[in-house]
Length: 290
Image (cartoon, rainbow, N blue to C red; front, side):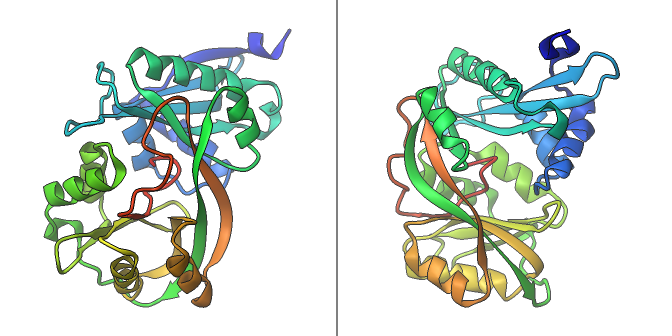
């Protein structure tokens, strides 16, 4: 029996989030159950289950965003861009074309919505995505380190969610207010808005580390000030994904004990605002969210 005949294609529902979390945990990723629930609720997560025992062995998620001032597109037609991520395959099922097959379903789904597929690719994945027609935009890297301070960063309830969503949309070129509202409502999420109201930074709980981002600011000096303020009030392991363009930020991270964990290239299958990083986006939300 061919491997494909031993698997059943499924679209994950709310009850399947724990199975997705088990896959990302096995890969050592930082996503939480809340992340998986958001993908299932607001996007479409394709999966493959083993026919004999029902085990989820592979996933890929498609999350559409609106290009204007609307919300996450969800399952309706809305244009904009669509984020592809959570491309996971259990170790014993790799190298059988499962990831490529699920990627195809994500691309078809997003195109049916009129959304341009976008993703953050690792160096290993870039050649495969390039063969599909994805074109590289800017480079970014994940930085990781450990902080020894006490957490006292203002909680999400102390900030204006609409103002943060507006700043984020200006920085990215697409609207993510549904995503940011979800982040802000999660227990443990911390937020800080710049004194001039021209920027913000979020920090949310991850499976392995606090995930810092997005961070939006008027310029790199302001971004560094926000980053320093956030770091002074967080503790434990921290991950953040920084475009390589921001050399002052990356130099400061290296000088303060942070190390590059991995690199990515933002890629798009068609026209999308990724040719160069926007001047106000200094830390992205993560490769799974953009």
